[in-house]
Amino acid sequence: MQTNESGDRDDLQGVVEAARDGSRPAFDELVRRTYVDTYTLALRLTGHEEDARDVVQEAYLRAWKGLKRFRGDAQFTTWMYRITANAAYTHVQKRTRQRTTNIDDVDEPVAVALEARTEDLAESNAGLAELAEAVDQLPQTLRQIVILKDVYGLPHEAIAEELGISVAAAKVRLHRGRKKLRDLLDESDERSAHAV
Image: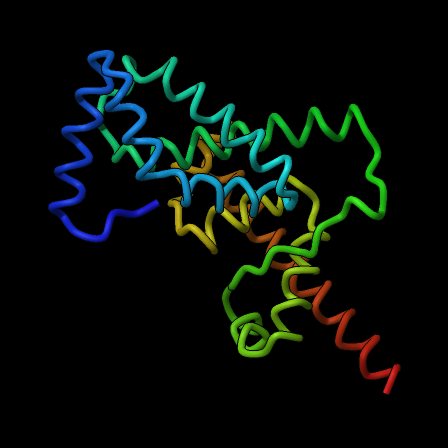
């Protein structure tokens, strides 16, 4: 959720101020300008299109209700990242408690690019699919942090604040998530080698 130029950022700030003053058309403009990035994040965090749409709807509802409290300490887009991540976490936890997944309902894994060995994998479609499958296998708490840090580049402090954990805990979970991801990729390589 990044604006391309500083002029766009300044322009967005004016729209944010108008929306904070209660202008529904201004808020609709904020939604229009940030929807694609918000939906992309929700999809990566939930791994399912229907869930992503529900998360986006919830995120914008929370944003509308909380806009008067938005102080502008961070950019609006960063604030939306946090709201979306929180809504996704809540939604996935609720979904996990309420339903089981039918194998026919499972979408293809969402592709993400990470560091180290994973960059090599991303160069091919097969490698990208392998990487996405490995990310999808991470436990939700680890997957969320890996995506927020390695895909969206959020700082540890922002991730910790959003998830209600300490910065140290965010760093530990990121380390565990990356290690688990490497282990999953190594296991996949071993299975492939034995299959040949």
